[in-house]
Image (cartoon, rainbow, N blue to C red):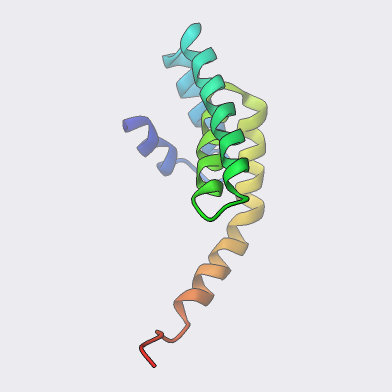
Length: 105
């Protein structure tokens, strides 16, 4: 749980690479293989769940985060995606926050 807090505290654009380095020091051998397998499995399940209502995107993102802990290439891609998607996400959240509440009609 502490490592996830460290992931959240990381600097945007570097957080996944920093987390990858910390996990690489902590986990070795079969633990890394198991983490990569679980990450890949979650990405695939998340992609399948996107066809139905539910948490498909969230499951896929968790899987990508696990893969980022085992692969520096994936961690770098996640950091670039965070920098690219971050401003759009903030604008979207601001727009949602400015909407008037919907009440019963």
